Image 1 (cartoon, rainbow, N blue to C red):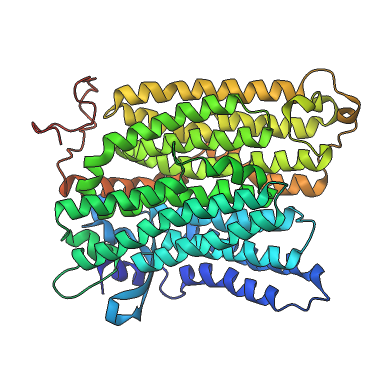
Image 2 (tube, rainbow, N blue to C red; image 1 turned 120 degrees about the horizontal axis):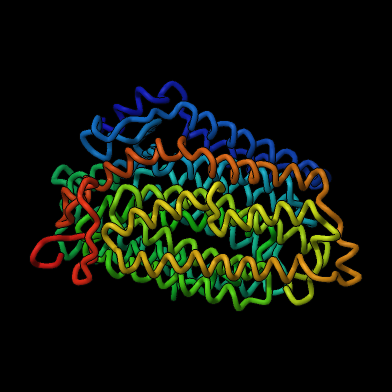
Length: 539
């Protein structure tokens, strides 16, 4: 058994916790699908129960997760816990291999907690049975993608996620739902085609002499791929993941998908699905292809920062409140791409934390926009005014979540962005300075939108806008608590992420020309070489 398997035997092997996190919502989807058509009222409560069990298991996973310092690990593969591995297709070297480390832990928790909240708290208005089935499959597939340690298994889970989201947008979205769903499907399927080719090439060309394997740890630790082949495979992986993030100019499917998706679909898309892209860049880009990652880092940092500025400027020009929030995601995800390819422990750790915090803040914003649409049947900013006087509690919650998205200190959004900017300045100073203007632009477009929607004299329809009801407050409460708690005390996230980030960067330095910056050295801004590399060839 691999070192990962040995560690897994001592961390959660008594109960296959990760398998349960995948199969509980999947079984729930099957149970709901088999419900008699005469009882559609049972679909959502029963589905929410299965999803909540998954959420409880995820919280147990976080509670039992051991913080192992990077110095005690001999390789990145040893950092995976709760490992479960069974042979699946032995002739091809494919196995059911799952595990979790500090990078994937909180993404699993986020997925498993957000889905039951929106499933229980957001009414689909029609066809609750298929709606619930797709939501549960979305939860199962997303968790499976975050814990997969086999390339083929990851691809299966990556594709499983695509189908439920397509049907959720097409079946429960708004007037342009079919166009948005088709565009989403075409973009992501094109990226997935490249991903599949690259996975097969990586397994065939990069496997050790003992035989073909799709095992992530074996391929990453072996590093048998020739340099040029590794670079081509990395490019294919990166394109597939950058479409999912998405970055400019591969982002055009996202505003349409977010705008036309039902509220629950928008929440899960922002909180979970976009993170499959940035997580993939970390887990499969840096880990599988360290030399290629270092080679391509300047380009990826550039597209990340372009996304920060482009997303912010475009968000400020939107007339639809939901579309504005969608473009804000492009900007926030650009920050994460910058953090990943800055190659410092602070920046990478900040990128992971920002994935979680963006999911919380932007997910809550989509919930709030959906609640407003239920009352006013419009999302156009110029048709809304004075909401604060009619619904003060709603306005107060919106203000808190909006400030979190801006990155105000004391709230969760500040932590990740601060770590990304501090960590990135050491290796990418020029791009970091440019990206920092995105924080200012975020304040501009969000505060301006808030002023137009919530302030001013309300129209007759705005004066009749109902405030938050108890059920809506209960749905929003976990997001509000997380926004404040993780802003004031982010230590649990930091402690879990830091060892995994450190070990991943050591793996990168060991297998590429990248030199880890010494944290004791002063930061020197070198305009001629801001890539954080110090060799004469400029690699």
